[in-house]
Image (cartoon, rainbow, N blue to C red; front, side):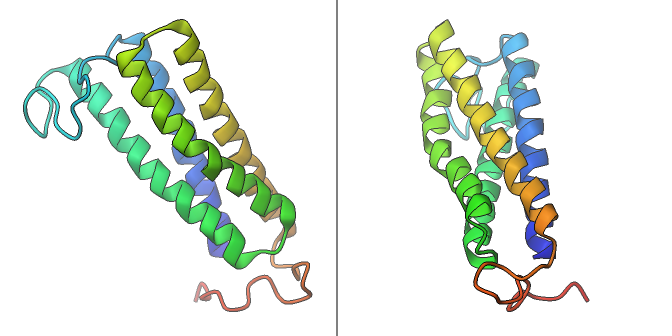
Length: 158
């Protein structure tokens, strides 16, 4: 359970950093600089201009964060029977594909409605991960709903 809590906290922090990076990307007007090219941008793997690098880096961090969200949701189901933790982590995972589609839509349909939907989905994911993290720290290593030790079967920190 200890490692799950750390994973949930790391995923939450990554998601927060991704949101800030997304805001910076939008504020710099860099959101359209790579167009539909991924992982390439400016004709190569490493972008040549600062705006292109910002957008490319935002997409890279988004991909990494997506994998962390998958791991957090899987960990919630494997290491806790707490319905609220599982539910919050599952909600974050369920909204992630929508967020990916909305992120792609911002490249092709750069309208306020699409931008608002993209930001709203990010906040739902972030809020769900905050809840997952806080609730996992609240439960500590207490027995789960099945009566078993919540840390049973999980590698120790030793």
